[in-house]
Image (cartoon, rainbow, N blue to C red; front, side, top):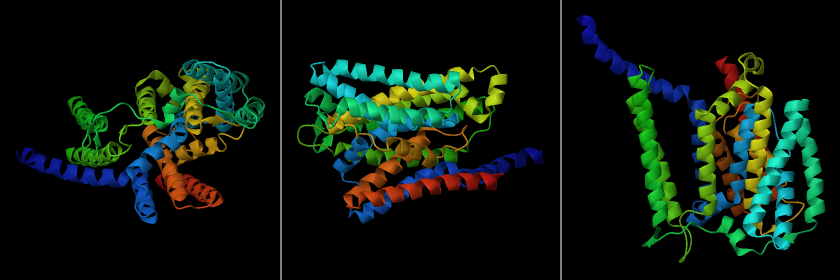
Length: 404
């Protein structure tokens, strides 16, 4: 009888203790979100409130779309213990081919298909050398960086302008909307739907764990996460709904593309066999081979996938710049790699998440945007970004040592 009486109190105390342990024990996971908030607050103050101007928030996504997209592919490559140094050069080459095709009368949609096919071919090229010949990814993509920068110079030369209005609208226009006062209705609808989806997914995930008798997060912690997520999504929704001009505004086309890619790849990494294989290969390649995973196929597919994502990044970059040149994409690969490391991806492979990489990419984007608004010299921007990357990797290594 006494045992039964003590059980509820024990459960209550256990839940309170679990909430504290979850908040403290997961600082490495949730710390990246706090870091993003801190960086935003700092630059909001330093820029005199201009950073979170609605149109500047839209520009943040439009100008840094290449980082967000390339970081998805780079994440998978780093998880599998590889690296890709050719991203910027491939963006320049594919963009040059696309601009040249449109200059010679190829329809914009056909030029996009051509760019995607070239990206897949380049990804297959890198994947072949890494997976089936055994050349390390670092060496293969270092060669690719030189090869495709040279080919970009041959194809694009000084510059190839892009005048097609439909193609240029990809990076600068918004999805159609109706204005309700100063607010874009589509942004409000999407924002509300996103909040509902997040709350539903968190509650259903906990309910499923409880139903199956698995360890579940305390309800107080789940509610806390839902409230924080709802506030964050609600504020971003408000900014997007206020963006644009008298004729269009709300959700930029670029953000839709990024959102679709994030959702698809989150599902792939967390719900599909391929995603589990990528983590298995990165965690312990020998064990993955012994368990029957075709590691060569996995290596080939992640580079093939990277080629596709880089082609998408090149399409958006060419659309935004409205011209192709041999210098396009300089240091794009560095930004993508930095976004992954800042987002908690392990240097040694096997660990990393899509949300983490996206937050890391947003931190890089806020740094770019904030320092640009402040008029900081480009040399200092590179210096600051380099220090941030070193700090992120050092934090990852030190936290692992402490845990060990």
